[in-house]
Amino acid sequence: MIDNANQILQQTRERLAAFWQGALQTEWERDRLFLAYPLMLPDGVQLVFELRPHTATNAILSDGGRILSRLAGEGLNLDSEATGRILDEKLAFYAIERDGFELRRPLALPPDPVEIQLFAEGLIAIAHLINRHDPEPLEESVARRSLERLFTARNIQPRRNHALQGQVEKVIRVSYFVEQGNGLAFEVVDRKTNIHGYMQQWGWRWNDLKAMQPKIIRAMIYDPDRQDWDTTALEIGRSVCDVFCPYHDSNQIDNALTQARG
Image 1 (tube, rainbow, N blue to C red):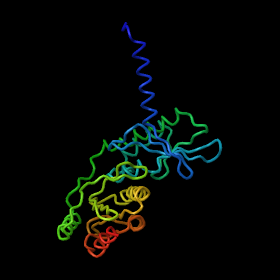
Image 2: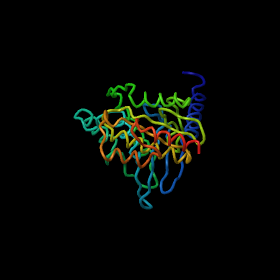
Image 3: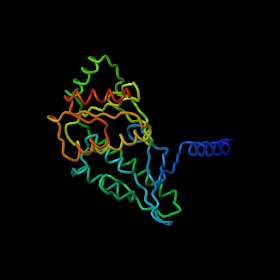
C-alpha cells in the first residue's frame, strides 16, 4: 500500500475539480445558454452546444447543427448505408434525436449533469465519424490560382490559411486574410461535390465571425463550371457574405478589397 495514497487521492480530486471549474465556460445569450465543454472535436476545436429552455421545467440540448454540417462539409455522406447505420446506432445509444443537421436531446429542468455529460459524449462520438472516411482530396483550383494572381498584381500579401476568432467558435480558418482597414477574410471553395452541406457549415461560420468582428468583410469565391451548386447553396452564400462571386468576377473581388479599406 502506498503510504501517501490518501494525499494523492485528495490532490487528484482537487486538481480535476479545479480544471473543470476553469475549463467549463457558460454564457447566456438571448434565449439560451451556451456551454463550451472541456472536450475537443477531432479538429481540435472545443465542443460547444446549447441549452434552450422551453418551459420552466423542460429544455432542449442542441448542437445547433454544427456537428453534422461540419461532417457533411468535409465530404462525409451522411445518407450512405454504412455511415447512416453507424450514425443511427450512436444516436440510439446516447438517446440523441436528429432533425436535419441538428442533434438534440430533451432535458428536464433543473438539468441533470449526467444527461448533459452523455449528450456531450454523444456529440464527440458522432463527430469522430469523420475518422471512418477519407475526405475528398483538395487540389489547387483555378479559383485559388486566379486569386493568387490578383494578389500579386495588386501587390497584396495576404495571410494564408489564417485563423480568426468567432463569438462561439474560437478558431475559424479562412483561405486568405488581408490585414487592411477592417480586415478582409477570403474563403475559396475548393470542394467539387456536397456543396450544400459545405455552405450550411460556412453560413454558420460567417455569421459567428460577424458577431465577433462586425466590421470584417467576408468574401467567398467559387468555380461555377467545376462545382455542383444548387439554388439553396448559392442563396446561402449571397445571404451571409459581403462579396460572393465566381473567381473570374474581378470587379466584385476588387469591391471586396475596397470595402475592407473602408
